[in-house]
Length: 414
Ligand code: AMP
Image (tube, rainbow, N blue to C red; front, side, top):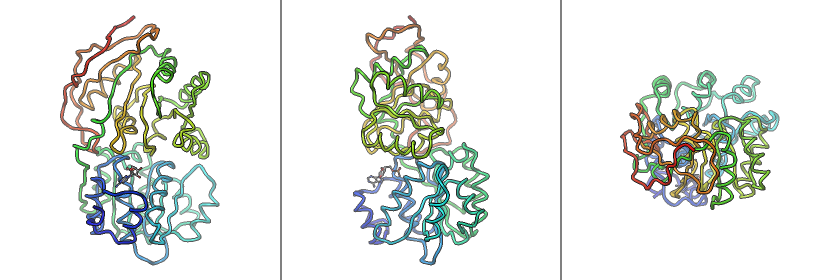
């Protein structure tokens, strides 16, 4: 019950208007602690409801004086936009002003919005520093700082910028840090930035990974496009998110799909902000059946009802596999994650299986005219689980043996 978390009536009305009836585990745990003014380290990934978990308490706690009183720093424009949307809805009955600033779009509209007054600012690090250095934003009144997707910000090299931003704020403030993974680097940031934080993990029993049906499709690298088309033509794949290793490959996959009359669109960092937004909106509305993405922009994409994630290429980093497949099976739905496996990706597969502690089952597509491919041995075992300092709800630290599922047609190399 949201009513039991200590939230004011005007925020509860906003929550109700958003259609939320029951708090998610991270909301249940984080909101009362944040309302007490304590620092928090939240280990949770997108899809857990973490946005409302930090937005609602900061809206309640911030004072009424003019100026930016709460700042959310997040790594990508897409996330900034999504957080702004949630914050707008939460402030529907409070009158507080919310704005997001991020790169890739013009400065002037953002400057104008800032000049009109902002209570809660959502920002990506680079654009925020630019605006600050031009005198367009004042961070000296910030009472609550949220560092969202801290692990991603570190991965993307944003930490020096974030540190500069922190130095522009009063030392006495509340800090809320959220991260899907708790690497040593993240823990280092926690130690240097937060004040005696309360650690909140979403219950491992809620692991979304368990709700995802995962399979590997061995295929030669030159036949991946054909296999994707075949799957899309033959199977009931409704709303499909395809991951490629590079932007170039994302565009190429899209071209292959359009040649076959399949509605697809690519989203990656070479595309303009408005192209990215159009792609995302088109995918959300059902105009496009397939969204082809690279890891950086796809992280945190908030689209419900993704039925299938297809790893056209396996990710370079095993952790990205978990983030990718976590885009499906959201909000209690089931989901499917299929991974194409070329022989040169065998070591990536071993790493992924090591990380998730499961041996993934292999399948092939009946009737597909495979050239050469290498099928991993069906009785292989997951390698030793890598040391995990992670518990965002998606991974379990314990080693699990491969699930006993029927393994079809392990044809081997042909
Ligand atoms: P987040 O992890 O913040 O990106 O949220 C993931 C999705 O869950 C978003 O689409 C939210 O609108 C939705 N959501 C968050 N909290 C709740 C809730 N208590 N009940 C239902 N849906 C929620």
